[in-house]
Image (cartoon, rainbow, N blue to C red):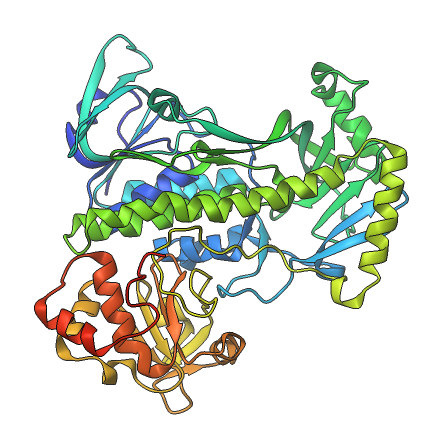
Amino acid sequence: MTTRPEPGSAAALRPVVDCVVVGGGPVGLLTAVLLAQAGLQVSVVERQAQRYPLPRACTIDHEALRILQAAGLMADHAYLFEPSQGERGGYEFRNGEGELLRAIDWNRVAESGWANTNGFHQPDLEAVLEDLAVATPGVTVHRGWTFQDLDQDAGEVSVRVASNDRPAEAVEIRSRWLVAADGANSPVRTRLGIDVGDSGFQADWLVVDYQPLVEEDWSAFVTQYCDPAQPATAVNSGPGRRRFEFMRRADMTVGELGRDSTAWQLMAPWGVTPETARLERHAVYTFRGRWAQSWREGNVFLAGDAAHLMPPFLGQGLCAGLRDARALTWRMGLVHRGLASPSVLDTYGPERTGHVREIIDEAVAAGRVICELDADRAAVRDAEMKKRSADPGAAAQEPPHPRLGEPSLTVPSRGADGRLAPQARVRAGDRVGLFDDVVGGGWQLVSRAGDPAGLLDDEDLAWFRRIGGVIADVSDTGPVQDLDGAYERWFTAHGCETFLARPDFYVFAAGEHTDIPRFVSHLRRALGRGTSDHEETKEERHDGDAASAFTR
């Protein structure tokens, strides 16, 4: 059984590892687990000696749960997450009179096989992630250690850390890579001098977490109260818990807003009182939309809040960080094993920046609606939103589905490339479950028009298997049954017969069944390993619009 090193213990620090992860929150821990599962030796350095015991993030989406599924967490811990329920899609904007202004369909059938949106208690998730990290061969978690400085050359990063008990006694760790998942005020990002972009949105909000002592009746999973007298948010924050958020008005100081008496006063209109609820936490946060201008400096990469911040109005902050972890670790894993060129790491930042900027923009736009304090402008807003919501097609809008940013490691595929690939329930032999569990994760080559392996020669097929690829024929006569018709619907919606998806579940290429050899050839070139004269000869036979565009 693997044990945790004592906080601040220098004896447990390994002087040489493949990757140092600075920051032991959910993003850092997941990064370490996924890297170690790919064969790397990883040290996690976390300043805090103990996990933070109170809630922070409280919503997580289907894509993030699929990422946790890939790490092996969901099989035994799906109970941590409570799916969105409620009328009109589960997410509502209402004005000060309680009238519905807009609805977002958070109850939709999502692409990834899990509920679109879920509430959860972050301390519970962090505890499970840390237990998983400690139990994963190759990972050591060092609590009570603070990042001090780093140096790097073309092939190595030298990281200096110090025990919180002995800050003057720095210890050096050498690694190929460093991942900074060290939060919004990232010391690593500061040390590198990376500039931060700013949306210009900023607002102080009181966040109040409580446990109901009586049964409560809410019509939506999330309700945004766009009341100029007091903007507020009510949200399900996981099994047995709820959260309110209240914007600070100009006539109240931050100190006044942060009092527990203020929290009770603001929640009272909803019947939440000391007699009906137990106050778990209350804290004032400044909501902002920011992003790092660069996510990489040499062999140092940013992830999570070190790379981006967004207002919480769409519940996407942690989700974005978990996407960072998956997007970075599959690349590092292939490079570490010699199956991809280090150049594949070049697209990590641009892909993730473009994707997360769209979500930040959407969250900021929602925030500007919610945070309007001028009664006259709010009345105009309400009239416009009610008019739009009267259109049946707009009554329950979709949450944002961003494409990967550019340049991306994809092949142009009539709009399907760079979008999420599906996961759904399948049957293969006597096994029934989600595709990643039954058939396999990693690279996925799926067709509704026959067996993809039948179009690949032995070399390409062996190479695809070597990088962790799985192949599935989900046609009516294929060995993998599409139990709920989800794959058929996806193919029909995108006008294609096959897709090749990456380990982070984004489509590398999609098209006709006969395109499969070309897709695999482009993937070999994109990864930059395993290319041979044989492959180049095949490329001459597979012309097409993607011939020179494996990174767009």
